[in-house]
Length: 208
Image: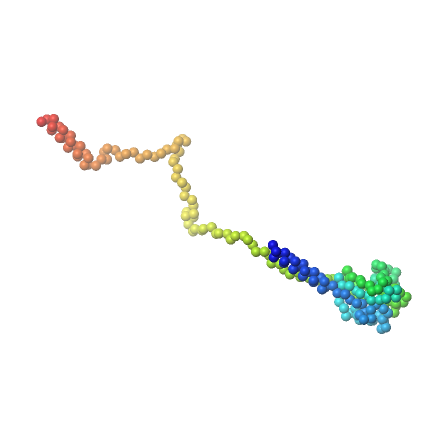
């Protein structure tokens, strides 16, 4: 029982560590953070191309509170730097952490002044999280005892049971076969000769 519990605990820990390792925090813009880039929007395009985003990762927007904000928008609003069709609520307190919960394209802008028109905008593509392969658990050993093969014979008659003999029934009454004693005629010639001599001696004695 303890060995099974250890195996289950090991699997849970492995899956947990794998999920933790799969989640990555991305500091938007790297060292410059979330601000108006000096080189324009290309700054964030280059940064996004150098990173791989997966569902479960976190975007970290480093900015000063009341100086910038972060607003997710659809592509049309991103292209026109408009906040008329926002996705969710704008985050105005920095730094801001946004967890990526769905795959596909995501667009973020700063709604302050003309910050978006000056290049403070970010477009990323998020990939679905690949399922981790959990370590396989070997099945427990079987405790089934081995089966003993039944004896076989090539002669069917040798395997057939021998019926027990029983007395024959005649009208519901068992009949017992009794062998009669041999008849007198079956006596040996010596006995017959002795009897004849005795009779002859008796007759001779009566005559004389």
